[in-house]
Length: 314
Image (cartoon, rainbow, N blue to C red; front, side):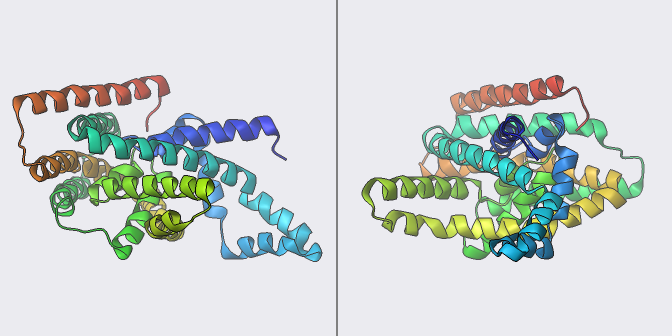
């Protein structure tokens, strides 16, 4: 039985994980590793099955309560729900803020993201082994895929239900990947700004509904958020397991691919700034480059400080 103090600790860890995954370059999986709950998280995720979920739901009947309690323990349900609540709280708060920052100061915001991503790649490359042709090929494939995708998705892929669903499925896999950020994957897919704005509108809709009793704004803002969540649920049962399998069977090649993916994704923040400057009828200037560089350095320092405090390989 988990006591209130332990639940608070789990919730606070969730807050840290959610904050990390809400910004490209820092991984919620890394935070889970640093705070000592990574293995428990993996065990809880892989324990989820339709059978156990049905047993938990069967607890509404008196005859099924014993089985439901046992299933809840097998799922580590209190841990998952509390951690999830912390993650959700942080993501809502941070992405709402990020949505505003992207609109007000895109050069500084994406410069900060560039620094986060670059420093993450530097830190993680300590664990990359490029001593075989297969691992070198995996690294090249990861870099090329991310570099090309960063250019294509930033300008060509318009948000749609299918795109948002797939984005949710892919982004959620970051939960089990120390070093890979869900927001980085969204940025790579060209959906980061869109989902930030969608979540901000969804939160505003909730507040408006509570204030006026009129759910019109909430109903209008809900579809992309719900679609993303459904994609994330599917991702937990598919992509996350596939990535875990790859890490278990071909760890060195998979790590080389994933870290090179981060390096290739460095193009994404630059493309995002290009897009916004072009839309505003502006171009890169010396002052814009300087601002981008300054905030890039700040972002890099955040990751390097985190790595120093962690004192572990991620």
